[in-house]
Length: 269
Image (cartoon, rainbow, N blue to C red; front, side, top):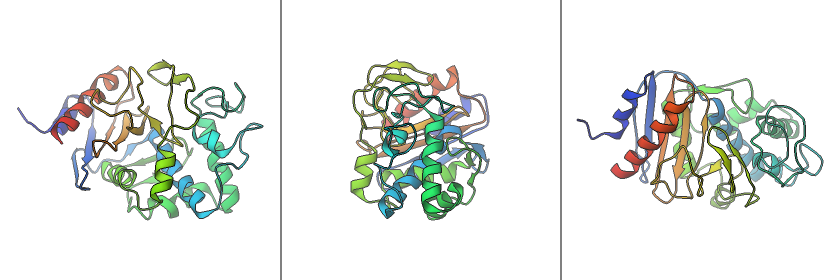
């Protein structure tokens, strides 16, 4: 039997690829390495990183009014604007509930596009995809779910999140800390969480149960998963990042397989 935790993807029942990045920056990957997979909501990490860059450049600011009345760019990235998941309907006042909102991410991206005077996909290409050498990545459709690419490109994104080169350490610390702490809300696929912690565009592991990362992941772990069978997390305490892609929609298989893979990677590090 293999001792390589990445071999676990062979049991996933679909074409799949996975890889991890160590504290030293080394990357390992296995599976369908050249296959272009849909990233679904993992796209939000690309979108968030582009907005982080834009905030540092001064193109936009966290306190820019955006979305519903009283909402800011910060609220939108933290899923705290009160917007409905997929429509412009307002379900709560800003800062009152954690409502996971694809629409909120789209509004945030549109705000940046207006400020920059260019399409958001073009900005993301210049700010993130190009500089990180993500040559297989195609970014079209919704900024909340439209990217697709290989595991190699997703690992380039994971490595950047682990040891950032495009943003300052101070920005990294801010965006990967819980924004608007204490908000209650539903984590899609895992139910109501009393403390549904999110940073600015990435989910924070915190003490959520159940969860899609492993039992060994630290509360500081952050990342995202997508309905296409995609996921990416960074554990800054362990110094490890993990990414996986699959040609199988998110479901019960993922809630079982991803934590097992996560724990195996953390144990083997």
